[in-house]
Length: 162
Image (cartoon, rainbow, N blue to C red; front, side, top):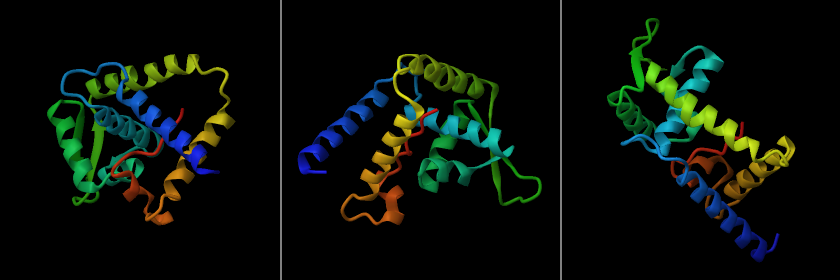
């Protein structure tokens, strides 16, 4: 790759970030990162049966203090519940409230289902190639070791295409 291609790729990444930031309006007080947390809690619960705070932190590449703040905000909004694990009192588990489940359905599942209708000419293989390209771009960033990709993203989640 030459520097001109890198510049075009970075411009495309900026455009992608802008697309995410201009998604349909969320309810007052909600931010896209709140939806990402709700979606992650939902996914982990479906995959594992229960969700720990650390599961969400790891999945979204967000520090524990930052994820704790987001979880507290979602609790106040009545979208998420945090409760102690019966087997290990040191562990806190998360679950969506009915309203939280409604938000995941509306702002994630239904939105993605509608969006994907306009992307029928893009194969799953092409999407995977795009994901790998962005991951490579992130890991090759000067000054960032391959093991510190999460630090490079400053709390940004990896791209996930469903």
